[in-house]
Image (cartoon, rainbow, N blue to C red; front, side, top):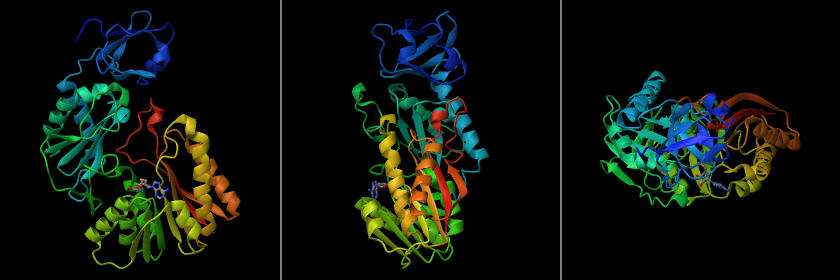
Length: 395
Ligand code: SAH
C-alpha cells in the first residue's frame, strides 16, 4: 500500500466513527490525498493523529467504508476471517441444511463487510459488490469462498453490473469468476425454486422473505390467496403448501409470471389451484371483485430508492394498501411490506394506517415483520434495516 493512503478528518468529526458507524462522509474529511485511486485501501485518522480504522475509499458522499476499526491488512486472510464469522452465524441460525441451501452469507455492514453481498444457492455463490474497493477484491473474495470448509461452494458468479457506481467506470462484467454452468435449483424450507442469477433481479431470488413466507404458509389453509408483486412466486408456493383453496399471482413482468409458473410446476405439478397474471398491480386491484380474496400479499419493489422520493413513496404505499383494504374479504389477512431503506418503520405504518382509516374497516396488527437473521443489522449502523412488514386482520 502506498504511504500516502491517509485520510485525516476535520476537527471534531470522529464522533460517529468512535461509535463504530462504518461510513466516513465527504464533509468530515479535511483533504483527499492527490492521486488517491477510487477503491484503494486507506487509513483514516482523527484530526489529532489518532488512527480510527482501515477502509475502502470511494468518490461520493460516503468517501470511506470502514472495514476494520484498527490498523488492519486487507488481504485474503482478512476476508477469510470475516467470511468464516459470517458462515458461523448462518450455521448457528440453522440455515445450511439439506432442505435449505438458499441464504445470504454476507450482508454488507451487517457482516462487517461494507459494500459486499453474497448469496448462496446450493453450490453456487452470487457475489455482488456495491463499492469499487470490493470490486477490486472480487478475486480474493471468490477464492476465499471456495476454500471455506463445509460451505460446499464450487461456482462463484460475480454480478455487479448494476450495483457499482456508474461514474467509477469499472465496467464490471457479470460472469463466473470460478466454475461455470451449474444446476440452478435452490431449496428453501423444503420448497424448490429455480434461481436465475444470470438474468434475474438482484442475485436471482429474494431470500429475505423466507421467514415471512413461512408465516404466510401457516395462515393459508382454506384461504383464497392473492400474491401481488409475485416475482419468482415465493409466497405463492408456500401458500399452496399451506393448503390454500386457490392462489393467484400477479406481476407486471411477463418473465416473473413465467418464473412463478415454473416454480409452482416444480413443486405442485398440474395443481389447478394456481393461476398467474401479467398485469399492473394497481389495475388488477381496481378491476378485481370485492371479497374475491381473503389473504392478500403486497410486496412491491422499493418505492423510495432515495430520501428525496419519500413523500411520493408514502403516497404510493397508502394508495396500494387502500385498494387492498377496500376489496379484501371480511376476516381477511393482509401481509403488507416495504423494502425501501429510506422509509422508516413508523412512516410505513403511518401510510398503512391512513389507508386503513380511508377504508373505515376494523384493522388489527397481528405481526410486525422484518428481514431475517441472515440479513443482520449492525447495531452501530441502523441504515442496515430495510425490510418492514405487517400482518393485519381486516374485519
Ligand atoms: N414478493 C417477491 C419479491 C417482489 S420484487 C418475492 O417474495 O420474491 C417486486 C416485483 O414487483 C418485481 O417482480 C416487479 O416485476 C414487480 N412490479 C413492479 N412494479 C409493478 C406493478 N406496477 N405491478 C405489478 N408488479 C410490479
